[in-house]
Image (cartoon, rainbow, N blue to C red; front, side):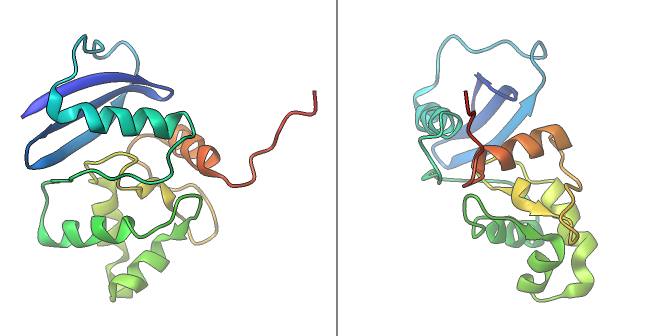
Length: 158
């Protein structure tokens, strides 16, 4: 496994992967890890695509993914990939789509364990009432990501 740390608008992003795919993309506060001086070849495309996303030049990712989790978690994470850029769904919507409304807590828990920040867009899942509930990266990051993806971003008049 190779690891790289890059700067992002939301903190230091850690990417871990190998020839089998990207296993982890996470974020931490600035100062917790040092930015890598070199990018391992196997992670260059992930770094490029994340940078394009933050620059507003990319709305979807084309990466080989290899997250580690239970069969249920894998199913939940796969469903997250179906949420389009700029759209949100509620935890209940996601649970209904997965076929068991009684599993809402398990679905929310699996979302919270999503190891592929941004690329598997758990930030696009919100409370039924539209609230920004639950996000492992912190609600301020979730708010930033949703505003970044908003199709109607307000522009300055001056």
